Length: 303
Length: 327
Image 1 (spheres, each protein chain N blue to C red):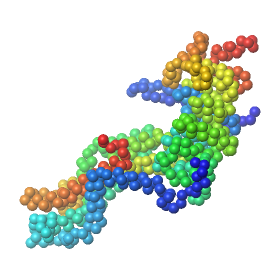
Image 2 (image 1 turned 180 degrees about the horizontal axis):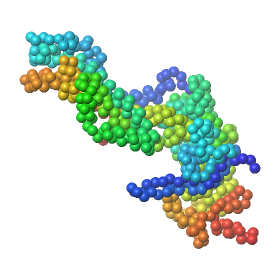
Image 3 (image 1 turned 45 degrees about the vertical axis):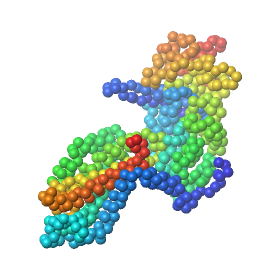
Image 4 (image 1 turned 120 degrees about the vertical axis):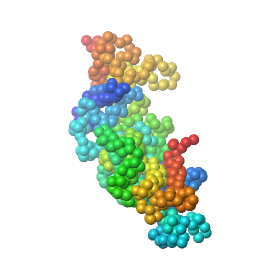
Protein backbone atom coordinates (compact mmCIF):
# COMPACT_ATOMS: atom_id res chain seq x y z
CA UNK A 1 0.00 0.00 0.00
CA UNK A 2 2.85 2.34 0.81
CA UNK A 3 4.28 2.02 -2.68
CA UNK A 4 1.29 3.37 -4.58
CA UNK A 5 0.40 6.03 -2.05
CA UNK A 6 2.03 8.67 -4.18
CA UNK A 7 0.12 7.57 -7.27
CA UNK A 8 -1.87 10.50 -8.57
CA UNK A 9 -5.61 10.75 -8.28
CA UNK A 10 -7.28 9.56 -11.48
CA UNK A 11 -8.21 12.27 -13.96
CA UNK A 12 -10.60 12.20 -16.88
CA UNK A 13 -14.24 11.19 -16.91
CA UNK A 14 -13.65 7.50 -17.65
CA UNK A 15 -11.10 7.02 -14.90
CA UNK A 16 -13.15 8.88 -12.33
CA UNK A 17 -16.26 6.88 -13.07
CA UNK A 18 -14.58 3.51 -13.53
CA UNK A 19 -16.59 2.01 -10.67
CA UNK A 20 -19.89 3.27 -12.05
CA UNK A 21 -19.09 2.04 -15.55
CA UNK A 22 -18.23 -1.42 -14.21
CA UNK A 23 -21.52 -1.45 -12.31
CA UNK A 24 -23.55 -0.60 -15.41
CA UNK A 25 -21.77 -3.22 -17.48
CA UNK A 26 -22.69 -5.80 -14.87
CA UNK A 27 -26.31 -4.63 -14.98
CA UNK A 28 -26.35 -4.88 -18.77
CA UNK A 29 -24.88 -8.36 -18.61
CA UNK A 30 -27.48 -9.58 -16.08
CA UNK A 31 -30.31 -7.97 -18.05
CA UNK A 32 -29.24 -9.59 -21.31
CA UNK A 33 -29.33 -13.06 -19.76
CA UNK A 34 -33.07 -12.96 -19.25
CA UNK A 35 -35.34 -13.52 -22.28
CA UNK A 36 -38.41 -11.90 -20.74
CA UNK A 37 -36.42 -8.79 -19.75
CA UNK A 38 -35.15 -8.44 -23.30
CA UNK A 39 -38.67 -8.94 -24.70
CA UNK A 40 -39.85 -6.21 -22.35
CA UNK A 41 -37.04 -3.93 -23.44
CA UNK A 42 -37.88 -4.60 -27.11
CA UNK A 43 -41.57 -3.78 -26.60
CA UNK A 44 -40.77 -0.63 -24.62
CA UNK A 45 -38.28 0.57 -27.24
CA UNK A 46 -40.77 -0.17 -30.02
CA UNK A 47 -43.41 1.79 -28.10
CA UNK A 48 -41.04 4.74 -27.62
CA UNK A 49 -39.97 4.77 -31.28
CA UNK A 50 -43.60 4.70 -32.47
CA UNK A 51 -44.45 7.48 -30.02
CA UNK A 52 -41.52 9.62 -31.15
CA UNK A 53 -41.95 9.16 -34.90
CA UNK A 54 -45.69 8.35 -34.95
CA UNK A 55 -47.18 10.64 -37.62
CA UNK A 56 -44.15 10.16 -39.87
CA UNK A 57 -44.55 6.36 -39.80
CA UNK A 58 -48.33 6.24 -40.22
CA UNK A 59 -49.28 5.29 -43.80
CA UNK A 60 -52.40 7.54 -43.83
CA UNK A 61 -51.69 10.44 -41.47
CA UNK A 62 -54.81 12.34 -42.54
CA UNK A 63 -56.97 9.42 -41.30
CA UNK A 64 -56.08 10.30 -37.72
CA UNK A 65 -57.51 13.79 -37.99
CA UNK A 66 -61.11 12.93 -38.75
CA UNK A 67 -61.05 12.20 -42.48
CA UNK A 68 -64.06 10.35 -43.89
CA UNK A 69 -63.78 7.74 -46.69
CA UNK A 70 -67.27 6.26 -46.85
CA UNK A 71 -66.37 3.98 -49.80
CA UNK A 72 -63.70 2.36 -47.62
CA UNK A 73 -65.84 1.54 -44.52
CA UNK A 74 -64.96 -1.48 -42.36
CA UNK A 75 -62.64 -3.18 -44.82
CA UNK A 76 -60.90 -6.33 -43.45
CA UNK A 77 -57.08 -6.36 -43.16
CA UNK A 78 -55.40 -6.19 -46.56
CA UNK A 79 -52.07 -5.10 -47.99
CA UNK A 80 -53.26 -1.49 -48.30
CA UNK A 81 -54.73 -1.50 -44.80
CA UNK A 82 -52.87 -4.18 -42.73
CA UNK A 83 -55.11 -3.61 -39.69
CA UNK A 84 -58.27 -2.97 -41.73
CA UNK A 85 -60.40 0.17 -41.67
CA UNK A 86 -63.02 1.53 -39.27
CA UNK A 87 -66.59 2.77 -39.73
CA UNK A 88 -65.33 6.08 -41.16
CA UNK A 89 -63.09 4.28 -43.62
CA UNK A 90 -59.97 5.36 -41.71
CA UNK A 91 -56.86 3.19 -41.63
CA UNK A 92 -56.67 1.48 -38.20
CA UNK A 93 -52.89 0.96 -38.38
CA UNK A 94 -52.32 4.71 -38.73
CA UNK A 95 -54.65 5.43 -35.85
CA UNK A 96 -52.97 2.83 -33.59
CA UNK A 97 -49.51 4.24 -34.39
CA UNK A 98 -50.54 7.83 -33.71
CA UNK A 99 -52.33 6.74 -30.53
CA UNK A 100 -48.97 5.60 -29.16
CA UNK A 101 -47.88 9.17 -28.52
CA UNK A 102 -51.07 9.96 -26.59
CA UNK A 103 -50.52 6.85 -24.50
CA UNK A 104 -46.91 7.77 -23.77
CA UNK A 105 -47.93 11.23 -22.55
CA UNK A 106 -50.67 9.73 -20.42
CA UNK A 107 -48.29 7.22 -18.86
CA UNK A 108 -45.47 9.73 -18.28
CA UNK A 109 -47.68 12.42 -16.75
CA UNK A 110 -49.59 10.09 -14.46
CA UNK A 111 -46.52 8.29 -13.09
CA UNK A 112 -44.53 11.54 -13.01
CA UNK A 113 -47.12 13.49 -11.05
CA UNK A 114 -47.76 10.52 -8.76
CA UNK A 115 -44.04 10.22 -7.99
CA UNK A 116 -43.69 13.99 -7.52
CA UNK A 117 -46.47 13.97 -4.93
CA UNK A 118 -45.73 10.59 -3.38
CA UNK A 119 -41.94 10.59 -3.01
CA UNK A 120 -41.55 13.79 -0.91
CA UNK A 121 -44.51 12.78 1.27
CA UNK A 122 -43.13 9.27 1.75
CA UNK A 123 -39.56 10.33 2.52
CA UNK A 124 -40.82 12.99 4.93
CA UNK A 125 -43.21 10.61 6.69
CA UNK A 126 -40.61 7.88 7.03
CA UNK A 127 -37.83 10.12 8.31
CA UNK A 128 -39.85 12.32 10.67
CA UNK A 129 -41.89 9.49 12.18
CA UNK A 130 -44.29 10.14 15.04
CA UNK A 131 -47.29 12.42 14.53
CA UNK A 132 -46.27 13.70 11.10
CA UNK A 133 -45.97 10.17 9.79
CA UNK A 134 -49.31 9.16 11.31
CA UNK A 135 -51.11 12.05 9.60
CA UNK A 136 -49.52 11.46 6.20
CA UNK A 137 -50.02 7.71 6.28
CA UNK A 138 -53.66 7.90 7.39
CA UNK A 139 -54.48 10.30 4.54
CA UNK A 140 -52.72 7.86 2.22
CA UNK A 141 -54.79 5.01 3.66
CA UNK A 142 -58.01 6.88 2.92
CA UNK A 143 -56.99 7.14 -0.74
CA UNK A 144 -55.89 3.50 -0.82
CA UNK A 145 -59.13 2.27 0.73
CA UNK A 146 -61.14 3.42 -2.32
CA UNK A 147 -60.40 1.50 -5.54
CA UNK A 148 -58.29 3.84 -7.63
CA UNK A 149 -60.29 3.54 -10.83
CA UNK A 150 -63.60 4.12 -8.99
CA UNK A 151 -62.20 7.25 -7.36
CA UNK A 152 -60.79 8.47 -10.68
CA UNK A 153 -64.23 7.85 -12.20
CA UNK A 154 -65.83 10.08 -9.60
CA UNK A 155 -63.25 12.82 -10.16
CA UNK A 156 -63.64 12.72 -13.95
CA UNK A 157 -67.42 12.74 -13.58
CA UNK A 158 -67.24 15.92 -11.56
CA UNK A 159 -64.61 17.61 -13.78
CA UNK A 160 -66.31 16.53 -16.99
CA UNK A 161 -65.05 13.92 -19.49
CA UNK A 162 -61.97 14.54 -21.61
CA UNK A 163 -58.39 13.35 -21.85
CA UNK A 164 -56.92 16.15 -19.70
CA UNK A 165 -59.38 15.61 -16.87
CA UNK A 166 -58.82 11.88 -17.15
CA UNK A 167 -55.05 12.36 -16.66
CA UNK A 168 -55.62 14.76 -13.75
CA UNK A 169 -57.96 12.29 -12.05
CA UNK A 170 -55.62 9.34 -12.46
CA UNK A 171 -52.63 11.37 -11.21
CA UNK A 172 -54.59 12.27 -8.10
CA UNK A 173 -55.36 8.64 -7.25
CA UNK A 174 -51.97 7.23 -8.23
CA UNK A 175 -49.63 8.74 -5.61
CA UNK A 176 -50.48 6.69 -2.48
CA UNK A 177 -48.51 3.70 -3.74
CA UNK A 178 -45.38 5.87 -3.92
CA UNK A 179 -45.88 7.18 -0.39
CA UNK A 180 -46.09 3.60 0.92
CA UNK A 181 -43.06 2.44 -1.04
CA UNK A 182 -40.77 5.34 -0.12
CA UNK A 183 -42.01 5.50 3.48
CA UNK A 184 -41.16 1.87 4.15
CA UNK A 185 -37.80 2.19 2.41
CA UNK A 186 -36.98 5.36 4.40
CA UNK A 187 -37.98 3.71 7.67
CA UNK A 188 -35.40 1.02 7.02
CA UNK A 189 -32.73 3.40 5.71
CA UNK A 190 -32.89 5.92 8.53
CA UNK A 191 -31.63 3.28 10.98
CA UNK A 192 -28.50 2.81 8.87
CA UNK A 193 -25.26 3.78 10.54
CA UNK A 194 -24.25 6.16 7.75
CA UNK A 195 -27.31 8.30 8.47
CA UNK A 196 -26.18 8.60 12.08
CA UNK A 197 -22.67 9.35 10.82
CA UNK A 198 -24.05 12.17 8.67
CA UNK A 199 -25.89 13.58 11.68
CA UNK A 200 -22.72 13.35 13.76
CA UNK A 201 -20.97 15.48 11.15
CA UNK A 202 -23.67 18.14 11.42
CA UNK A 203 -25.58 17.54 8.18
CA UNK A 204 -28.99 19.21 8.09
CA UNK A 205 -32.18 17.20 7.56
CA UNK A 206 -32.70 18.19 3.88
CA UNK A 207 -29.18 17.03 3.08
CA UNK A 208 -29.76 13.70 4.81
CA UNK A 209 -33.08 13.22 3.02
CA UNK A 210 -31.98 14.11 -0.49
CA UNK A 211 -28.30 13.21 -0.37
CA UNK A 212 -28.33 10.01 1.65
CA UNK A 213 -31.82 8.53 1.67
CA UNK A 214 -33.24 9.43 -1.76
CA UNK A 215 -30.36 7.94 -3.83
CA UNK A 216 -30.85 4.68 -1.97
CA UNK A 217 -34.57 4.71 -2.84
CA UNK A 218 -33.97 5.12 -6.56
CA UNK A 219 -33.90 1.45 -7.56
CA UNK A 220 -37.35 0.46 -6.17
CA UNK A 221 -38.64 3.77 -7.50
CA UNK A 222 -37.48 3.05 -11.05
CA UNK A 223 -38.93 -0.44 -10.88
CA UNK A 224 -42.32 0.76 -9.65
CA UNK A 225 -42.45 3.64 -12.14
CA UNK A 226 -41.71 1.40 -15.12
CA UNK A 227 -44.45 -1.04 -14.11
CA UNK A 228 -46.87 1.82 -13.40
CA UNK A 229 -46.36 3.19 -16.92
CA UNK A 230 -48.21 0.16 -18.28
CA UNK A 231 -50.90 0.25 -15.61
CA UNK A 232 -51.50 3.99 -16.08
CA UNK A 233 -51.92 3.53 -19.83
CA UNK A 234 -54.35 0.68 -19.19
CA UNK A 235 -56.36 2.77 -16.70
CA UNK A 236 -56.54 5.73 -19.08
CA UNK A 237 -57.72 3.38 -21.82
CA UNK A 238 -60.36 1.99 -19.43
CA UNK A 239 -61.69 5.48 -18.80
CA UNK A 240 -61.64 6.11 -22.56
CA UNK A 241 -63.55 2.85 -23.08
CA UNK A 242 -66.43 3.92 -20.84
CA UNK A 243 -66.49 7.28 -22.55
CA UNK A 244 -64.89 9.40 -19.82
CA UNK A 245 -61.46 9.73 -21.41
CA UNK A 246 -60.50 10.79 -24.90
CA UNK A 247 -63.42 11.52 -27.19
CA UNK A 248 -63.98 8.88 -29.92
CA UNK A 249 -62.75 10.58 -33.08
CA UNK A 250 -59.34 11.20 -31.51
CA UNK A 251 -56.95 8.29 -32.06
CA UNK A 252 -56.78 6.99 -28.48
CA UNK A 253 -56.70 3.23 -27.95
CA UNK A 254 -59.39 3.06 -25.26
CA UNK A 255 -61.72 5.33 -27.19
CA UNK A 256 -61.18 3.26 -30.37
CA UNK A 257 -62.16 0.06 -28.58
CA UNK A 258 -65.12 1.83 -27.07
CA UNK A 259 -66.53 2.50 -30.56
CA UNK A 260 -65.39 -0.87 -31.91
CA UNK A 261 -67.39 -2.65 -29.21
CA UNK A 262 -70.61 -2.23 -31.20
CA UNK A 263 -68.97 -3.74 -34.30
CA UNK A 264 -67.98 -6.99 -32.55
CA UNK A 265 -67.66 -9.80 -33.56
CA UNK A 266 -68.21 -9.44 -37.31
CA UNK A 267 -65.74 -6.60 -37.73
CA UNK A 268 -63.26 -8.12 -35.25
CA UNK A 269 -60.18 -6.31 -36.51
CA UNK A 270 -61.54 -2.95 -35.38
CA UNK A 271 -61.31 -3.90 -31.65
CA UNK A 272 -58.50 -6.44 -31.91
CA UNK A 273 -55.65 -4.19 -33.05
CA UNK A 274 -56.04 -1.29 -30.58
CA UNK A 275 -56.57 -3.95 -27.88
CA UNK A 276 -53.38 -5.70 -28.93
CA UNK A 277 -51.53 -2.40 -28.76
CA UNK A 278 -52.67 -1.90 -25.16
CA UNK A 279 -51.86 -5.51 -24.31
CA UNK A 280 -48.34 -5.40 -25.74
CA UNK A 281 -47.58 -2.02 -24.14
CA UNK A 282 -48.67 -3.15 -20.67
CA UNK A 283 -46.87 -6.47 -21.11
CA UNK A 284 -43.72 -4.68 -22.28
CA UNK A 285 -43.58 -2.30 -19.33
CA UNK A 286 -44.31 -5.10 -16.86
CA UNK A 287 -41.60 -7.39 -18.22
CA UNK A 288 -39.19 -4.46 -18.37
CA UNK A 289 -39.98 -3.51 -14.77
CA UNK A 290 -39.56 -7.12 -13.65
CA UNK A 291 -36.22 -7.27 -15.39
CA UNK A 292 -35.09 -4.04 -13.74
CA UNK A 293 -36.14 -5.35 -10.35
CA UNK A 294 -34.11 -8.50 -10.87
CA UNK A 295 -30.92 -6.55 -11.43
CA UNK A 296 -31.47 -3.58 -9.12
CA UNK A 297 -32.94 -5.50 -6.20
CA UNK A 298 -31.49 -9.01 -6.47
CA UNK A 299 -32.79 -10.11 -3.07
CA UNK A 300 -36.39 -10.08 -4.30
CA UNK A 301 -35.62 -12.46 -7.14
CA UNK A 302 -37.88 -15.49 -6.75
CA UNK A 303 -35.76 -18.58 -6.95
CA UNK B 1 -5.89 21.37 38.14
CA UNK B 2 -6.54 22.08 34.45
CA UNK B 3 -10.08 22.11 33.11
CA UNK B 4 -11.35 18.80 31.74
CA UNK B 5 -12.18 18.82 28.01
CA UNK B 6 -15.22 16.65 28.57
CA UNK B 7 -17.08 16.10 31.80
CA UNK B 8 -20.14 13.91 32.24
CA UNK B 9 -22.13 14.51 35.40
CA UNK B 10 -24.52 11.79 36.48
CA UNK B 11 -25.40 11.07 32.85
CA UNK B 12 -28.52 8.90 32.52
CA UNK B 13 -30.26 7.49 29.48
CA UNK B 14 -33.44 5.45 29.89
CA UNK B 15 -35.39 3.98 27.01
CA UNK B 16 -39.06 3.12 27.24
CA UNK B 17 -39.90 -0.05 25.38
CA UNK B 18 -43.27 -1.60 24.70
CA UNK B 19 -44.04 -4.95 26.27
CA UNK B 20 -47.16 -6.21 24.54
CA UNK B 21 -49.96 -3.77 23.84
CA UNK B 22 -50.23 -1.95 27.14
CA UNK B 23 -47.26 -2.63 29.39
CA UNK B 24 -44.05 -0.68 29.01
CA UNK B 25 -40.65 -1.29 30.52
CA UNK B 26 -37.81 1.08 31.22
CA UNK B 27 -34.39 0.08 29.98
CA UNK B 28 -31.69 1.81 31.96
CA UNK B 29 -28.99 1.83 29.29
CA UNK B 30 -26.88 4.41 31.12
CA UNK B 31 -27.59 4.93 34.79
CA UNK B 32 -25.75 7.80 36.41
CA UNK B 33 -22.34 7.86 34.76
CA UNK B 34 -19.83 10.54 35.78
CA UNK B 35 -16.59 10.75 33.83
CA UNK B 36 -14.07 13.31 32.73
CA UNK B 37 -11.50 13.39 29.96
CA UNK B 38 -8.51 15.74 30.25
CA UNK B 39 -7.17 17.50 27.15
CA UNK B 40 -4.66 15.34 25.28
CA UNK B 41 -5.33 12.14 27.17
CA UNK B 42 -6.99 8.93 26.06
CA UNK B 43 -9.73 7.57 28.28
CA UNK B 44 -10.79 3.98 27.70
CA UNK B 45 -14.24 2.67 28.51
CA UNK B 46 -14.40 -1.10 28.82
CA UNK B 47 -17.27 -3.42 29.54
CA UNK B 48 -19.06 -6.38 28.00
CA UNK B 49 -21.84 -6.12 25.42
CA UNK B 50 -24.90 -4.40 26.84
CA UNK B 51 -23.01 -2.42 29.45
CA UNK B 52 -24.02 0.90 27.88
CA UNK B 53 -20.64 1.94 26.47
CA UNK B 54 -21.95 2.89 23.05
CA UNK B 55 -24.96 4.66 24.53
CA UNK B 56 -22.60 6.89 26.53
CA UNK B 57 -20.91 7.80 23.25
CA UNK B 58 -24.18 8.57 21.47
CA UNK B 59 -25.45 10.67 24.33
CA UNK B 60 -22.27 12.69 24.84
CA UNK B 61 -22.16 13.44 21.11
CA UNK B 62 -25.79 14.56 21.39
CA UNK B 63 -26.95 12.00 18.84
CA UNK B 64 -29.65 11.08 21.33
CA UNK B 65 -30.84 13.18 24.24
CA UNK B 66 -29.96 12.19 27.80
CA UNK B 67 -32.76 11.45 30.27
CA UNK B 68 -30.90 13.24 33.04
CA UNK B 69 -27.46 14.56 33.89
CA UNK B 70 -25.16 17.12 32.33
CA UNK B 71 -22.56 17.08 29.59
CA UNK B 72 -19.85 19.74 29.81
CA UNK B 73 -17.51 20.29 26.88
CA UNK B 74 -14.60 22.61 27.58
CA UNK B 75 -16.52 24.04 30.51
CA UNK B 76 -19.63 24.75 28.44
CA UNK B 77 -22.89 22.96 29.23
CA UNK B 78 -23.93 21.30 25.96
CA UNK B 79 -26.75 19.16 27.37
CA UNK B 80 -29.50 21.30 25.84
CA UNK B 81 -27.68 22.78 22.86
CA UNK B 82 -29.60 22.66 19.57
CA UNK B 83 -29.79 24.15 16.08
CA UNK B 84 -26.74 25.96 14.73
CA UNK B 85 -24.93 25.93 18.08
CA UNK B 86 -25.11 22.12 18.11
CA UNK B 87 -24.02 21.98 14.48
CA UNK B 88 -20.90 24.01 15.14
CA UNK B 89 -20.17 21.93 18.24
CA UNK B 90 -19.99 18.86 15.95
CA UNK B 91 -16.78 20.37 14.59
CA UNK B 92 -15.08 19.83 17.92
CA UNK B 93 -16.24 16.31 18.70
CA UNK B 94 -16.32 13.53 16.18
CA UNK B 95 -16.88 9.78 16.24
CA UNK B 96 -15.48 6.74 14.47
CA UNK B 97 -18.02 3.92 14.52
CA UNK B 98 -17.49 0.25 15.15
CA UNK B 99 -18.52 -1.04 11.76
CA UNK B 100 -16.91 0.79 8.82
CA UNK B 101 -18.92 -1.37 6.39
CA UNK B 102 -22.20 0.28 7.35
CA UNK B 103 -20.85 3.69 8.39
CA UNK B 104 -20.24 4.64 4.74
CA UNK B 105 -23.05 5.27 2.28
CA UNK B 106 -22.64 2.69 -0.49
CA UNK B 107 -23.85 5.18 -3.11
CA UNK B 108 -21.13 7.71 -2.32
CA UNK B 109 -17.52 7.57 -3.46
CA UNK B 110 -14.61 7.86 -1.05
CA UNK B 111 -14.29 11.47 -2.18
CA UNK B 112 -17.93 12.17 -1.26
CA UNK B 113 -17.49 10.50 2.12
CA UNK B 114 -14.37 12.42 3.16
CA UNK B 115 -15.61 15.68 1.62
CA UNK B 116 -18.95 15.61 3.41
CA UNK B 117 -17.84 17.24 6.70
CA UNK B 118 -15.93 19.92 4.75
CA UNK B 119 -18.94 20.63 2.55
CA UNK B 120 -21.44 20.60 5.39
CA UNK B 121 -19.45 22.67 7.88
CA UNK B 122 -17.18 24.87 5.77
CA UNK B 123 -19.06 25.00 2.47
CA UNK B 124 -15.84 24.05 0.67
CA UNK B 125 -16.06 23.22 -3.06
CA UNK B 126 -14.07 22.92 -6.26
CA UNK B 127 -10.29 22.58 -6.26
CA UNK B 128 -9.73 23.54 -2.59
CA UNK B 129 -12.08 20.70 -1.63
CA UNK B 130 -10.21 18.20 -3.80
CA UNK B 131 -6.87 19.36 -2.31
CA UNK B 132 -8.20 19.06 1.20
CA UNK B 133 -9.58 15.55 0.61
CA UNK B 134 -6.28 14.49 -0.97
CA UNK B 135 -4.34 15.74 2.06
CA UNK B 136 -6.65 13.82 4.39
CA UNK B 137 -6.18 10.67 2.32
CA UNK B 138 -2.41 11.11 2.63
CA UNK B 139 -2.80 11.56 6.38
CA UNK B 140 -4.56 8.22 6.79
CA UNK B 141 -2.26 6.51 4.23
CA UNK B 142 -4.91 5.83 1.62
CA UNK B 143 -3.63 5.78 -1.98
CA UNK B 144 -4.91 8.80 -3.89
CA UNK B 145 -6.00 6.51 -6.70
CA UNK B 146 -8.85 5.36 -4.42
CA UNK B 147 -10.49 8.77 -4.47
CA UNK B 148 -13.35 7.92 -6.84
CA UNK B 149 -13.86 4.34 -5.71
CA UNK B 150 -16.91 3.08 -3.90
CA UNK B 151 -16.80 1.64 -0.36
CA UNK B 152 -17.52 -1.90 -1.55
CA UNK B 153 -14.28 -1.83 -3.53
CA UNK B 154 -12.23 -1.28 -0.34
CA UNK B 155 -11.17 -3.63 2.44
CA UNK B 156 -12.38 -3.23 6.01
CA UNK B 157 -9.19 -1.56 7.19
CA UNK B 158 -9.24 0.87 4.26
CA UNK B 159 -12.88 1.73 4.96
CA UNK B 160 -12.02 2.41 8.60
CA UNK B 161 -9.25 4.74 7.41
CA UNK B 162 -11.84 6.57 5.33
CA UNK B 163 -14.03 6.90 8.44
CA UNK B 164 -11.07 8.23 10.43
CA UNK B 165 -10.23 10.74 7.68
CA UNK B 166 -13.87 11.89 7.75
CA UNK B 167 -13.77 12.24 11.51
CA UNK B 168 -10.55 14.27 11.65
CA UNK B 169 -11.37 16.41 8.59
CA UNK B 170 -12.68 19.26 10.76
CA UNK B 171 -9.76 19.04 13.22
CA UNK B 172 -11.91 18.01 16.20
CA UNK B 173 -10.58 18.30 19.73
CA UNK B 174 -12.30 15.17 21.00
CA UNK B 175 -12.46 11.98 18.98
CA UNK B 176 -14.76 9.22 20.20
CA UNK B 177 -13.66 5.81 18.97
CA UNK B 178 -16.49 3.30 19.38
CA UNK B 179 -14.77 -0.09 19.11
CA UNK B 180 -12.99 1.05 15.94
CA UNK B 181 -11.17 -2.22 15.42
CA UNK B 182 -13.57 -4.94 16.53
CA UNK B 183 -15.09 -5.38 13.05
CA UNK B 184 -11.67 -5.80 11.45
CA UNK B 185 -9.43 -8.81 11.26
CA UNK B 186 -6.55 -9.13 13.65
CA UNK B 187 -3.65 -8.10 11.40
CA UNK B 188 -5.52 -4.97 10.34
CA UNK B 189 -6.46 -4.18 13.95
CA UNK B 190 -2.82 -3.77 14.90
CA UNK B 191 -2.22 -1.45 11.92
CA UNK B 192 -5.18 0.77 12.76
CA UNK B 193 -4.24 0.89 16.46
CA UNK B 194 -0.67 2.00 15.91
CA UNK B 195 -1.95 4.47 13.34
CA UNK B 196 -4.43 5.86 15.88
CA UNK B 197 -1.66 6.28 18.40
CA UNK B 198 0.49 8.22 15.91
CA UNK B 199 -2.49 10.29 14.86
CA UNK B 200 -3.19 11.30 18.43
CA UNK B 201 0.29 12.74 18.81
CA UNK B 202 0.32 14.33 15.38
CA UNK B 203 -3.02 16.12 15.75
CA UNK B 204 -2.90 16.49 19.55
CA UNK B 205 -6.25 14.74 19.84
CA UNK B 206 -8.14 13.73 22.95
CA UNK B 207 -9.53 10.22 22.69
CA UNK B 208 -12.50 8.54 24.26
CA UNK B 209 -11.85 4.95 23.35
CA UNK B 210 -14.63 2.41 23.78
CA UNK B 211 -13.68 -1.24 23.66
CA UNK B 212 -14.21 -4.64 25.18
CA UNK B 213 -10.62 -5.56 24.50
CA UNK B 214 -8.50 -4.84 27.59
CA UNK B 215 -5.19 -5.29 25.80
CA UNK B 216 -6.13 -2.66 23.24
CA UNK B 217 -7.18 -0.21 25.95
CA UNK B 218 -3.94 -0.80 27.79
CA UNK B 219 -1.97 -0.07 24.63
CA UNK B 220 -3.76 3.10 23.67
CA UNK B 221 -5.19 4.69 26.81
CA UNK B 222 -3.95 6.63 29.81
CA UNK B 223 -6.94 6.08 32.03
CA UNK B 224 -9.76 3.55 31.94
CA UNK B 225 -13.33 3.30 33.23
CA UNK B 226 -14.93 -0.11 33.67
CA UNK B 227 -18.66 -0.15 32.94
CA UNK B 228 -21.26 -2.72 33.89
CA UNK B 229 -25.01 -2.44 33.28
CA UNK B 230 -24.90 1.28 32.63
CA UNK B 231 -22.69 2.34 35.51
CA UNK B 232 -18.98 2.81 36.14
CA UNK B 233 -17.69 0.25 38.66
CA UNK B 234 -14.04 1.22 38.68
CA UNK B 235 -11.84 3.85 37.11
CA UNK B 236 -8.28 5.01 37.30
CA UNK B 237 -4.94 4.96 35.52
CA UNK B 238 -4.58 2.01 33.16
CA UNK B 239 -1.64 0.53 35.03
CA UNK B 240 -3.41 0.79 38.39
CA UNK B 241 -6.70 -0.68 37.23
CA UNK B 242 -5.24 -3.55 35.23
CA UNK B 243 -2.35 -4.44 37.58
CA UNK B 244 -4.23 -4.02 40.83
CA UNK B 245 -7.89 -4.42 39.93
CA UNK B 246 -10.03 -3.66 42.95
CA UNK B 247 -13.55 -4.47 41.84
CA UNK B 248 -14.44 -8.20 41.59
CA UNK B 249 -15.79 -7.51 38.10
CA UNK B 250 -12.55 -5.93 36.90
CA UNK B 251 -10.64 -8.78 38.48
CA UNK B 252 -12.72 -11.26 36.52
CA UNK B 253 -12.17 -9.30 33.30
CA UNK B 254 -8.42 -9.14 33.85
CA UNK B 255 -8.30 -12.84 34.74
CA UNK B 256 -10.12 -13.65 31.52
CA UNK B 257 -7.29 -12.25 29.38
CA UNK B 258 -5.58 -15.31 27.94
CA UNK B 259 -1.94 -15.51 29.00
CA UNK B 260 0.79 -17.80 27.78
CA UNK B 261 1.78 -20.55 30.19
CA UNK B 262 -1.02 -20.17 32.69
CA UNK B 263 -4.29 -22.02 32.70
CA UNK B 264 -7.03 -19.52 32.08
CA UNK B 265 -10.47 -20.03 33.47
CA UNK B 266 -10.15 -19.40 37.18
CA UNK B 267 -12.34 -16.68 38.57
CA UNK B 268 -14.32 -16.45 35.34
CA UNK B 269 -17.84 -15.10 35.58
CA UNK B 270 -20.74 -17.37 34.86
CA UNK B 271 -23.97 -16.39 33.22
CA UNK B 272 -24.82 -13.37 31.13
CA UNK B 273 -25.14 -9.72 31.94
CA UNK B 274 -28.69 -9.13 33.31
CA UNK B 275 -30.99 -7.14 31.03
CA UNK B 276 -31.00 -3.43 31.67
CA UNK B 277 -34.81 -3.48 31.85
CA UNK B 278 -34.78 -5.68 34.97
CA UNK B 279 -31.94 -4.19 36.96
CA UNK B 280 -30.86 -6.22 40.01
CA UNK B 281 -31.60 -4.58 43.33
CA UNK B 282 -28.73 -3.06 45.31
CA UNK B 283 -25.30 -3.43 43.71
CA UNK B 284 -25.93 -4.14 40.04
CA UNK B 285 -23.17 -6.73 40.04
CA UNK B 286 -24.19 -8.77 43.11
CA UNK B 287 -26.02 -11.46 41.08
CA UNK B 288 -22.78 -12.54 39.43
CA UNK B 289 -20.27 -11.46 42.06
CA UNK B 290 -17.80 -14.27 42.81
CA UNK B 291 -17.07 -12.83 46.27
CA UNK B 292 -19.28 -13.78 49.15
CA UNK B 293 -21.79 -10.97 48.94
CA UNK B 294 -22.72 -9.11 52.06
CA UNK B 295 -26.43 -8.56 52.81
CA UNK B 296 -25.82 -4.88 52.04
CA UNK B 297 -24.91 -5.73 48.42
CA UNK B 298 -28.45 -6.87 47.62
CA UNK B 299 -30.14 -3.80 49.03
CA UNK B 300 -27.95 -0.77 48.43
CA UNK B 301 -26.02 0.50 45.44
CA UNK B 302 -22.37 1.37 46.18
CA UNK B 303 -20.87 4.69 45.05
CA UNK B 304 -17.42 5.19 43.56
CA UNK B 305 -15.00 5.57 46.45
CA UNK B 306 -11.37 6.73 45.99
CA UNK B 307 -8.79 4.08 46.79
CA UNK B 308 -5.67 6.14 46.21
CA UNK B 309 -4.89 8.89 43.76
CA UNK B 310 -7.62 8.93 41.14
CA UNK B 311 -8.23 5.19 41.33
CA UNK B 312 -11.87 4.74 42.32
CA UNK B 313 -13.96 1.64 42.89
CA UNK B 314 -17.65 1.02 43.65
CA UNK B 315 -17.77 -2.04 45.89
CA UNK B 316 -18.83 -2.33 49.54
CA UNK B 317 -16.52 -5.27 50.22
CA UNK B 318 -13.49 -3.37 48.86
CA UNK B 319 -14.27 -0.22 50.76
CA UNK B 320 -14.59 -2.22 53.97
CA UNK B 321 -11.37 -4.16 53.42
CA UNK B 322 -9.41 -1.02 52.55
CA UNK B 323 -10.83 0.79 55.55
CA UNK B 324 -9.79 -1.82 58.09
CA UNK B 325 -5.95 -1.45 57.98
CA UNK B 326 -6.06 2.31 58.19
CA UNK B 327 -8.51 2.26 61.11
